[in-house]
Image 1 (cartoon, rainbow, N blue to C red):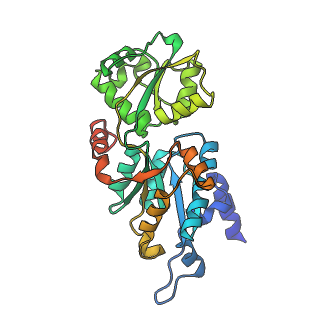
Image 2: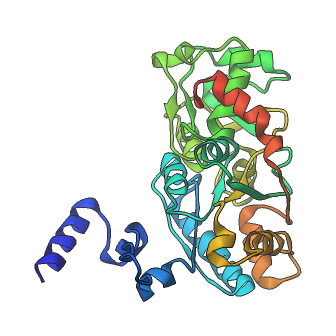
Length: 315
């Protein structure tokens, strides 16, 4: 009873519900010569999926339980979605084994694989082979659409925000092109840029005028436009980057050992099989902003690693 009280108090202080404790605490190791407890054996059969929190929680909580349900149906194992608080937490959870399959952006995917040798690149969306970032501006800023990267020099002295500090499309690649235009982070108003934490937050901040300009994922920008979340009288797109490889699923290297020989390949085949003709899969793909998933390989992300090292996000 005393243990229960202490556990409850600790959970409350950490903002964690008791229901989440089995997911956060690893199963106890068995004593030498004895089999693992039944609960520990069962936990090995739960596939835990996660994703970088690049959009509002309500969007993530709508999408990833659907992904978990579809994978569970196809793979015949229990699949649960485990939310994380930020991009760094997703990388850490993958490194420590808290997550088995994670939807990463390019930068966080490279970081995760560098920290977990043997991690497997599973698949990317059809739109990820040549993804793009969009620079947007509040119309009151006086910024106009530009035709080439050198035009980004107009952002000097402006209030500018990225998304998450570890976002590929909301920070890494935009900063890379800003550097090409001769714009340093200290050139923005106040001597530094802002970091909104997500793409939809960046759009909202620029639209409100809190920031005069920002950089976002083209996918989120387009979906926000189509859903009427952007006031075109207040916000305008001023430039779009060239394409680069972006989001992808990455799996732990030991899934075949835990779930049986060939499990990783079966999981890849399941994700690659999703089509709009299947009602369940159509909803998942629509929320991903894609028509299908396609094969991906680690080598395609080498340029992202190079840029990450250039701007100090990978050491």
